[in-house]
Amino acid sequence: MLGIQYFKAEPTEFARIKVGGKVKKEGEGISGFYMPFKTTIEMVSIAFNDQPFSFQEFSKDNQEISLQGGFVYRIADPRIAIGKYNFSIDPRTKHYQTDDTRKFPEHVLQLVRSEARKVIQATPLEQLLIMGEDLAQKVTKSLTDMGIATQVGIDFKTLYFEAIRPRPEIAKALEANYREGLLQKADEAIYGRRALAVEKERAIQENEMKTKIEIEQKRKQLVDLEGANILKTADYKAQATRKELAAYDGVGPDMIVAQALLRLGENAARIGNLTITPEILAGIMNGVRTSK
Image (cartoon, rainbow, N blue to C red; front, top):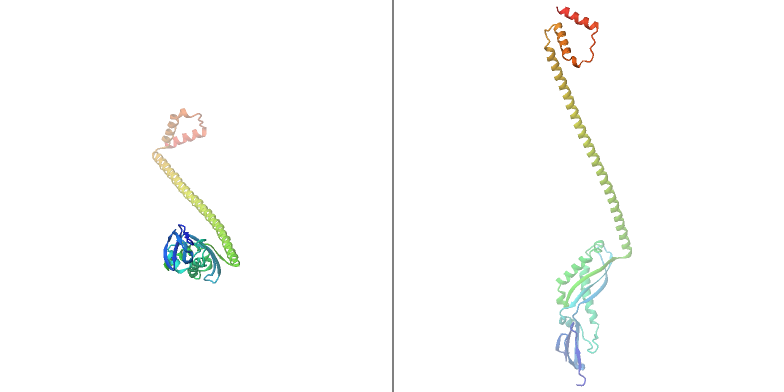
């Protein structure tokens, strides 16, 4: 038939064919013949899209920061999207006839930025610089709670922040503070190691001194014990001697001399030489006479 053309959407494309303003056919990957002069075809991609972004905001302490990242989404309900934006195409080239295809992700970005601004303006700069993942989670939760899926018909999958940067001069100042903090921590670590070494040395010296004191105390105890033993031995010897001498109480000198000579005679085999001088003999004889 003259003027009749054929259209086919891809499996990841949702298309709506309208004739005279009335929907004749719609769905994913649909195809069919159409009359160009009275047919309008609208189409949206239902595949996942990664939309990058970059924008500036101010932190709680009024510091400007730049945020770079992106979000992954797909149009889960294309009927809502088509109802809000003009996605009409040229069926032959599939080129969009309006710029609403750019407005759609921009609208989503504005929602992301709006929710991110609430968190950023309530957070100090230094905390923001390290909260990329936390910021993404908070913004995603806010978008989910506000029902972004029902507003524009999208399935918001992932939000990420690749970079959160302050102005260059602020970054240099923070780097200097951070570097100074690292040097201070290094000094504290060195001081801590030295203090620990001194403490260990002191503990070693205390242990050595304690050991010496214990050794000296044991030595004193040993000396006291040895001294006591020596005194006891001397006492026992003195008592024995007194008892031996007590046996001679009332015995005359002649008997003592005779006893001595008897002992000498009993031990004569062990006596090498015995010299009795005239003086000794005279003394013995005198003692004998005196006892008579």
